[in-house]
Length: 157
Picture 1 (cartoon, rainbow, N blue to C red):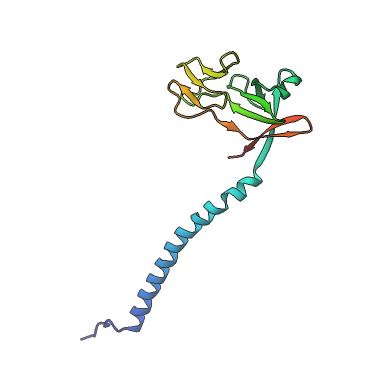
Picture 2 (cartoon, rainbow, N blue to C red):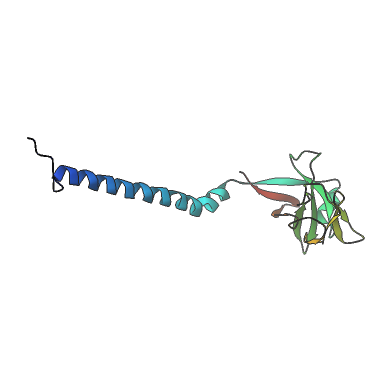
């Protein structure tokens, strides 16, 4: 009669130790790799930033203290554009896309507000929701002024 290996068999023990250590290493890798990616993402994304020039109907619009409609270079003409104003020498830009249904908002200078004609959403001059169905404020776009031109800084996805 042959004898079965007992629990003290060194081959079996080393096999289970290898399985346990391998499993622990796999779990550690599954946890550490995404965590490192999450921490390094802002650094990597910074390298993928690009500037796109803001195009105005009139060059004088670039220094307007009130919002003027503009487009970002390469943007489709049928898409909602952006609104730009200059405050204390610094450009500010807001997306012209309503946060409710993506409709194009308009700037009402007399009322000092943005208005979405689709569902009567209203935003104040800072893009904050005043009334209507929009769930969030208008998107603020990061801008830079370089040699008299205004650029929107975008991160490639």
